Length: 515
Image 1 (spheres, rainbow, N blue to C red):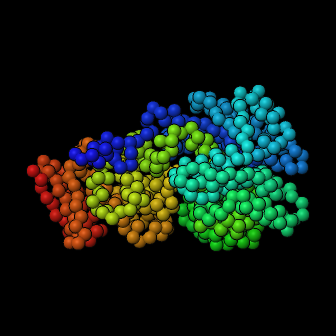
Image 2 (image 1 turned 180 degrees about the vertical axis):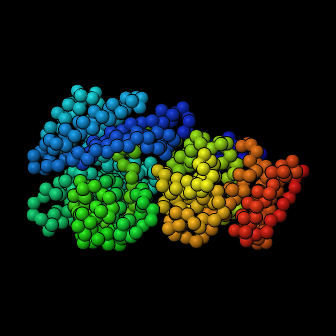
Image 3 (image 1 turned 180 degrees about the horizontal axis):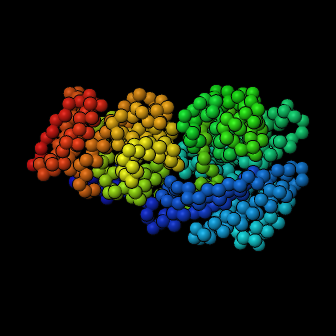
């Protein structure tokens, strides 16, 4: 065995040894975070694979703590009552879940309000929960770290809009760079600004011009973090009749943003609410957020715009991770965790990956990553009813909370897993999603799925392969080599699956018996 093979045998393959059960990261398996913002108060409990955690619990209360703050200098009295009730509930929930404690952070409203310290003391007296007030630059840093949780090594500008403030941070090569914060662009503050639309737009332009001067050129991707941005993305989806209603990693062009802002201006809030299901409290803030977004795009001229569902809460989790865990691929770590938890034979995914890879000799690193993910997930839905396994696989891959996946990659993964359980993809409820992936990608996903479908028939143990594939693209020949003792595995069903794979590849099949 050569040095590379020895390394891969001990570390779990070319994607590294899984870390989710490592003693150094096991403490991150369940972490509770409370985010007390100007508009909402939210509890999130993360669970599962530490690098790409599942949302064990997620509850949000729209409290509008920052409403009226510009005029009174104090927290919204009604919002304060609602926030306290929510925090009392969250503390009891945390105790019921057996959490060691909650990490609670407050941002602009509590930070700026005269009665912010009194509110914190009241919360502590009634719940025992200590609230850590973070400044604007720290808020920007944590939001940027939340983005890095899902996009390791990303380049771009993070823009986090809360109810009372807006934060900017740049990320480069997995690190957070310059950070800025302003309380002048939060929707709750803009709503209270005197002078109407013209005065407001002049104010927004002046503030963003000053921010741009301090941040410098930022022409990579613009990552949008915050509920108002997500609401605008939902409207963009509705305008485009976009089929995959997953906000995380949803992409918009500069042109699409301009068209959607015009779409918002042309329609009443009631019509938009009916079309998208956005709450009334959120809809009230969208016109102000839209004005800010329009100026941001015109000023910074980003390469494109991406929605991030990850922000401060995820940034707090990222903060607790050792660097070696931060450096891992969130998709692969999540898939490893799913295989270990749900597959019938954990570890076989790596064997299957080695088995199918000869079919993809020109695969790029991003494609190899998706092939690896598919192999790890190929058997995690075995408990589903046989008639619905293919659909369950596709649905899980396209809609699950997985980081590091573009929408087209979600469809690729979904199609590969769908073909793991059925030959044809026509006749499902997901056909409108297939168009998010080009024809070449669809064909590659089908080949991968059928190769996994066949490879699973050769399952004997998870420590060695019972055969191997070769692909002669020039002669269009698919060669299966198997030891003679394993040939009984190549029965009628296996032969049928091999024939389906060969047909998809336009290949003939050759079987070689090995001693």
